[in-house]
Amino acid sequence: QNIVVLTGGVGGARFLEGMRAAHPDTQITAIVNTADDLWVFGVRVCPDLDSVMYTLGGGIDPERRWGRQDETWNARGELERYGEPEAWFGLGDRDLATHLVRSDRLRRGATLSQVTDELCERWRPGIRLVPMTDDEVATRLVVDTPEGESDVHFQEYWIRYRAQVPIRSLRYEGIESAAPAPGVIEAVEGADVIVVAPSNPIVSIAPILAVPGMRELLRTAAAPVVGVSPIIAGGHVRGMADQLLGGLGLEVSAAGVAEFHGARSGGGVLDGWLVDTADAGTVSRIESAGIAARAVPLYMSDDDTTRALAEDALELARPLA
Ligand code: GDP
Ligand code: FO1
Ligand code: CA
Image 1 (spheres, rainbow, N blue to C red):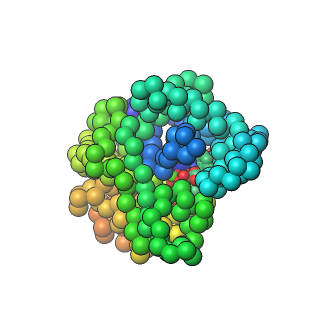
Image 2: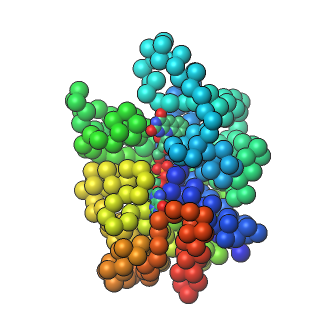
């Protein structure tokens, strides 16, 4: 069996842990969002790839859920003392080593997928991690800051402005000329099931689908496509997904996200969608949009419920194959 998961960072990484626990001997391929990535202080940072790699490799900071555990911040302190304008972006000392290796390889001509394979030789995530594209894409937003309208990278909006400023527009810069990374098309075509992880719909899943060819690839895939809602009872679980959905005028609900991704039968990408038991009342609305829906516990509070959630996703997919 081949399982393919489309994923962002935190929510997706946790879900992948459950999938790996449920199917330790199965080939699982994660297609990871790279539109959060940025160059800062001369290094290439890939937050979602690193969140997934560190989580599955046992190196993630368990509280922050990004960056390394047992981290120190000496380099960051020194950057602040230099008055570096980008010091709002926190690169820990341990994390910095990952970025030095990645950036060195990229400058020598390696592709992001090659570097990711190399980093994974150390972390051994047990799941194949493939960036959505080897080309540079950046989620950028035009926002209203206290200093006026500003065109910022997603990371600046997220970290510096804590997703608290009004959004005028959002775009995935560079996406038109991006191509799926090697292995992406083969993975989707060879999949027995494709799962959309409980990741941020706007900044994790949508950019993957916006890579030219991806939407069509999913629409015509032989395997069923099922997703897990990142929204429970009208709110984000961890992180700030509601700021983006709400900020763009979209409905912040499990059903709203299902309709945003759309039914495969109606030009979207989903055959099935899992909502939390708290949202059981919206199952019929989702089904009337042409998406098979079920209500199960979606809160990944411990390893057992996370593994059960992965099983539930595969079970929802089974009759849709
Ligand atoms: P990011 O790239 O690091 O922001 O991570 P993702 O995009 O993969 O995941 C962020 C999303 O995960 C947020 O929208 C959260 O609502 C969702 N999330 C986090 N924990 C859980 C959970 O336990 N259950 C569900 N269903 N969603 C979760
Ligand atoms: N998140 C923060 O809130 N503050 C930071 O300074 C920060 C630095 C950082 C460095 C490397 C990395 O891989 C992730 C980092 N994050 C930080 C998290 C990052 O903004 C998020 O994981 C995502 O991009 C949200 O999708
Ligand atoms: Ca992300």
